[in-house]
Image 1 (cartoon, rainbow, N blue to C red):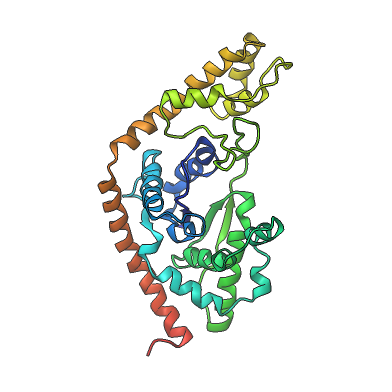
Image 2 (spheres, rainbow, N blue to C red):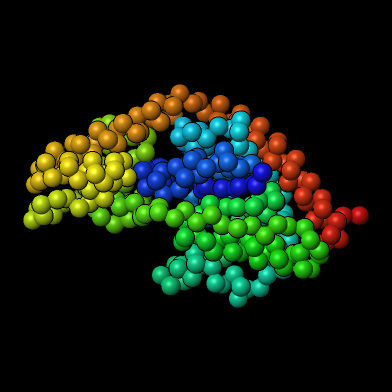
Length: 311
């Protein structure tokens, strides 16, 4: 069975854009592979500076994936920082790549283009990400098309190491999550906590209703485009065609229908999330880390021997 891996940074409150943009796809397909899921807390350090916020985020993201259907008994689930081989391997890869090579990373180029100061972690994150992927002999990594470069960097790191020291790492392939549209926010832009235009994934019905009622609409249009775009994530086009035809110009009624359809999907997940305790999540991550370290340490023993640091 092929091996699949996915990692998610524990940053910010989850919203339906996160769910439909990546989370749902991983949970839908993970059982078809020998799957690994990790909380990328070291990657999160680049943007999260509050220790309490990071700790809460780690618990939240792990619990969220369990709540939406990931079974930690069927997938390896752990916290990145609990497996020191990730950062060790990243350092070894640093000795095989050049500065111009890393300068091509989209996140770094975007930071520079927008006048933001790029710290070393942002500049070097592709090698830590490569280590995340390659440590576990990963065959495939599910990503959106805008994240394809992450896997390309991992492939290049594997090729450079294999060329220098002999066959060691698989060259992983990306699974492009086609058909995953950009989820629109309440203002029509991409749903993002940065824009404050989100609908919370585990929000109460009242919180969902407040967000939906704030969706910007065009008072001159017969159909609220932004409402429909979000509604299409929850209902098929035939159903929505009839609903929006029957309620032409009735924006409040259509928003209320959207609230009910979101609630029908979110409520069961919210109940499962509320039933998971922090201690249960910590135990799952601790147990997963033990299993992950066993695999990672075996891989690193081979790597250390090949680069010449083990005696």
